[in-house]
Length: 406
Image (cartoon, rainbow, N blue to C red; front, side, top):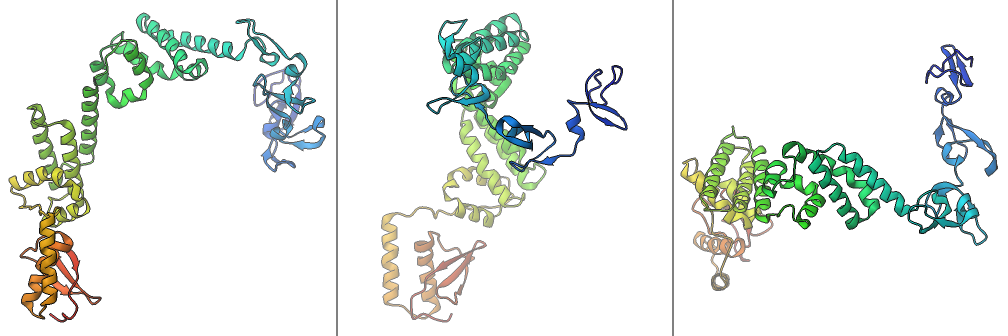
């Protein structure tokens, strides 16, 4: 390459020509990028940077990974270098093999010669101090000193290496405090600005603040903020323009008013709203119906207490007349009484409509835990038993042997 010619890729002049194209010369460093990838004969990977490595006995060009097949992390100095085998079979880099150990110029402790000018502990300590100083330059005077204190605490808690690798992560949090207050505020102010979820992302900084007495963590405020966030997320998933969404939003406003009056907790409100949102979703965004309510309680019978308030709210608005069936619990004496009644009917069975009605009434309560409603209907199952349809749902109950036809 002539002195006044520049590489068409890096634009540098005076370099050795590795390739000459119609567009102009290409230097040795850039030439591989203009060659077609070739398959490495050793590992099979495609690469443009093929080269021979005669020290490994490789006479044909191979990829960069195969060129450094004798390189690894030295067990002594932990540097990635070419390793050599010792008499005892251990592998070390050349410097650790030839010079052994020396003293760290900074602390005087013994260290592998391959470490260079600092032992590992001093290296991480120096890197941490350097990064803390760089971060301090982006903060005001008060927060800069606080960040330095945090870095020292971080080092004592997790070690210099962990602190050096992660301390930069918390700079943004300190910068936001610096822009907003210029100092570390109270825990309540932090919650209002970052919320509980945001403070969880900087849990280590909050732990430092609490241990050093800079803030006093209020568990009650944190839990309330978390509940507010969950309620907001529930609201975001509800379409307030739909009939069911409007009912849910009105119910939410009533509950929040109760909370302001001190009549209920945010956790109870969130649990009630969560159940109400699930019922509205099952109703397809429409106002809940008796069948959707029954289906919901059949799948989740434990939510009866949480859904009761929403059912009362729907009924008070005159949208529907929903009834929560008292079918989840049955006393031991009632179960025993029903069991005796069924045994008695099996002994004195009759193939009549009246007998079937008595059997269905007792069997529905005993086997399905539900009282028989007036709007029920039933049919015989070809496989045996009866299928009772009630409130849009179907229930199967057994039928005594010898009873057939309607």
